[in-house]
Length: 442
Figure 1 (cartoon, helix red, strand yellow):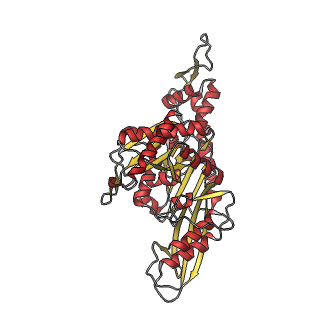
Figure 2 (cartoon, rainbow, N blue to C red):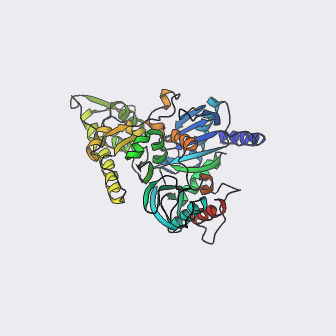
């Protein structure tokens, strides 16, 4: 707990620096690792649309399973250590973080609204009225919205309008995407960050920010599916016409593949992870029946020899789990009713996507072109932090610098904004408070 106490003292010392421009800090809290990226306000190059971090830190995750926190002290300690390492590289201290998560039964809901107008230009108040009307249709008991994103505006039935302000029309239409997670998971996440003596500045959906980091603008416009394959979950973000249109998540990830290997070969979790990294593949390879692999035995019996098995057995364990996960995701996408373009490609991010053969399995399951995604707008990242596993942390920084702009800020949704915090309503529903905030602030 000494690391947490040190962080508490450091935060007390930061109060005298409140007048300075704050650093932007991103935290990816996953089941396999915790990553922290730090960026100074001057690290944004708007002409080249690139970013530059001043600090990166990542440690093995503890206290997190399947995208949810299962041990508060261990998770808070891992957060504090990752942030501390990033601060040492940056030579500066941070006060708060925005957290990327794929846990909490991540899901999305699409709602629409129509507002009648007079014969005058559309103004912000009209947009606010349409958004408030759309939010009033949503009831999400026990859930907390983390993103409120316009999918598309329309004026007198003309769809595809990016910004309707100053346009003339008699009817303004809006289709809005509400991305939400479990309220209890959200509260636990915020409390865990505060236990690490950091300000909780809001949560974002991992597949959404991973897509922001990995996708090209053309892919978002033409249609794309971003699959974020983490250690504890596999989540998806679907884009069309430049907007996010669907988010979903499965509580199955790379850690489940590791557990399958440990059971199938009667080895330890650490041994299974090492074998998966060195020899694992989801597709067949030459001579795999004759090639043997060794795994350490379970327990501490000094007389027990290593577990020896053909590499084909390892492939026989990995491939069914990877294929089943992607097939479940495919069926969930079909059932969602999200308008998927037949020519939309698929981009894989997350640490589990780096396993050999995953791309080939994804091509077979989805019958679409598939590529591996990496952070695009951080050219100065070291090789060790520039792979698919770091897309979520990079995407938080990109979202802070370049958007997309949401109808309600993360701080407001997290209940952290004081001057602009939504007024409390009788229901206490975050969506109701967001609608009230729109009336008060737009």
